[in-house]
Length: 490
Figure (cartoon, rainbow, N blue to C red):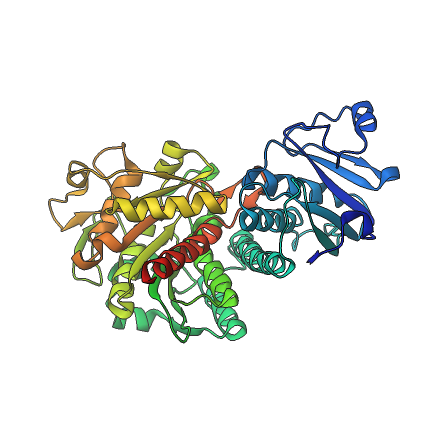
């Protein structure tokens, strides 16, 4: 789908269909020209409700407000509705609200998300009739927008939206076709296409790096593990940032075997790794002046005679020993070694990790919200603000001095699970904290995306399956800290 911006009024743009938003159920707005027909059709203007009037060449869609997330969702619903037609060229005006950049980006993202489907394994493919969208600079509230600025907003939003869809595709790929080796090849392809540096370590490389925790998780799998290190290095970077992604291409739970119903959707346990790939794709295509390193621990957690076991004691890269009491708490073991690697090899200004880490986070915040954890309140607030502006939901979970005692081990430095069932998202994060050096404590964020990364029902502008959680909010945060740094220099 090609999305372009035109200075022509809507009436002068020839197209098959016009998308018109009915904002806050205001049927008296001049753009709502078919009130009587809409009333006959029973259209009430509810959020994401659509009504196609073929004879008038218009599709109406409801939006509760001009808030960017309502607009994003409305335009996704409009494109989904048009997929049932033969409309190839679509036009619309602008719905800028209080923030021109944010809303035109939301319109663009909504249309690209509304056109997304994952169907490579279906005999009958989805239909995508809309090939071209023309957005007039004519605005719903009579504002004006510079054509060049508008085109720039559309272009950058399209990059981020397509990187998000790229992430969805990898998360949605079945485990037999997205093994650790296959995920590494995907990273190599991205590096070749986007001019990134890429290093891939096999088992021998992991042994040389003393990644005992990571290697233990992979032992029972027929598919060998891979550590993937991607790097985007612009000429004059303002920050150096390390992103660490959990890449469990399949998680059976190991010897602490999951119940059958919990094994379904475990292809999504690589969503943190996929988010890192999507972020690097977006950042490199936007050419942001941020040096970004993506470190991914890719492996499977399977069962077999050589599987790691409850009661085992593992030694991580930083020399700390880990008592295993549950082999289904494996992602934190992989992340522990990868976080140590990132701190030593990258020495970043900021360190973020992305992981579908705990069901406890889903219990705490629900399916649609990412848990944000870390030591620095300012950093957590900064990231959550960026997430809200990007349209992703976050909730901050607070550490306290009592939680750390729950992962104390009598036989090792730390235990991989808590001694209680409560606060599991936080104790998992505090386990990771054992592998964060003192100098990075206030520069580290742990993002538990277990809720939004993969949901088996459609929600908002997200289809059933992967949502690409983490990509948009992280890119927005990069833009936010760059803007702040620029302002501080003035």
